[in-house]
Length: 506
Image: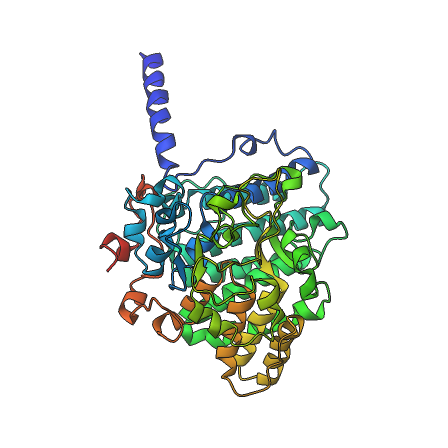
């Protein structure tokens, strides 16, 4: 009888244990769950690269950069005459903020894109869990890892963990937050400002454990550095400034201070605009953090993931008969707003000669460092996925300084980027804050920041800045977010979805 009771308890437990750990639909990587894995420094480094690979996996699932950070304000239209034109019409569905229609199924783009995967945050939590486990193991001690190295590895883990939270906050708003290893208790979503403030406090404890940069050029931008952490804290602060407006000055001041620290370090530099191909190829002196990709190393991108894929045609994409026009284009009116005259080298180097084409003849060469295996191959742009870049953080610092009324220093920062672009320096006239916003739109086009800049500055509420204006009511109800997959509700009574989308997106 005793043996029977024990057997029943074991069987019952085998059903109960998995269910309590499914509330975020995550599982630790098998090799990371046991003490037998962390036996050397090489094991730790392998884990760090694995976390980066897993994070990039989320971006590589679909046309992520464009869908989340570029198209939702309506500046991009599709070219109906392009090869498989109806499948590219999703850019205009996103431009109307019709995410319900985008994800409803039965659409021409269903066979090409996997937009539904953006709603699933599981991959981010897998990265977070891996980072939590690694930090715990480093605290316990790993053979061959001294105290200095342990602090550096913990800083890298904290960076990728906080980067995961930052991406989720910008996509979903409030998220579930935890930092303990092997977390199993169901928890609800925490206010996003609180989440980011916790991430900021966490990163501050690790910031100075990392070098400004690496002597090994293969590690530049690829492994987290002090500059990576500063860039992430700056971006988190500026996001919070838009949603915690009572404390905005504090966030602006910290962003400005960190931006000055970054520039003063002299660890990074803006390469001459003629050397842009070096920047986009990756591992340059301008990169703060990136997902390095190179066809020379056999890196495999999803066919639809690169942003530049939508804005290239022959001879940058082949064969000619299926690539006579680009799949999509930026509105001519919008391009006129960004580049009202030709005295900006970016207009010459990053675009084909007709940047105001307003149709499929438009071509964006910013990401056009293509490598073809043979003469007639439909190849995606062979470029690195830039997450944080020195020019972007200089402009973020300029924005914070302008908000603080320190216009002189803001203009100095702004003109660092203008000078590199060989564009006329800003003196006065146009509103400084608006000019800095437009400069970020110019400089970071296609890098996944534009829509989030519209949201955090609330310019998304104005037709001056967006073709898809949100009302204040819709904004407050989360119309800027993405829907969250129903999988998030599994075995978690405390979890909720984004009500705006549950209620039909209106």
